[in-house]
Amino acid sequence: MSQSSPVHVSDGTFDTEVLASPEPVVADFWAEWCGPCKRIAPVLEELASEFAGKVKVVKIDVDSNQELATRYRIQSIPTLLFFKGGQVVDTVIGAYGKDAYRKKIEALL
Image (cartoon, rainbow, N blue to C red; front, top):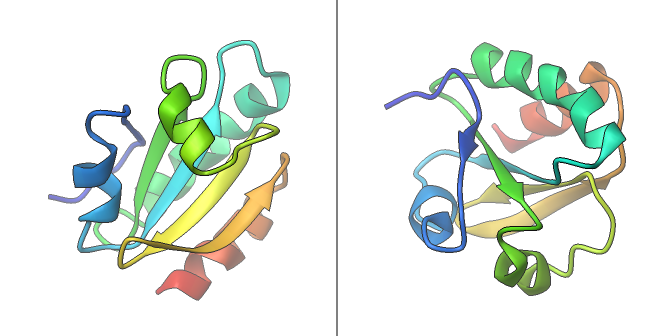
């Protein structure tokens, strides 16, 4: 099933939604109080729609999913982890423009 908008995942659904995903995954570690996270949210929505069926975009709230934030050593947000075959293959820390994220996503395909 292709996703045209980001999927919210939790400590409990992460392994299924991300690690077992047949398609590459962009995991956005964010928090409600994070200004830069809110700025990139619409960009990630657009990219999720643009790459629907090819790449899955997921959002992980670090406040309510601290186990995942610890597991992946998330120290500042937003942090985007790029997964392929259940492995982290790239990381972007901080808020960037759509083209920067698009290049990273295209490299996954």
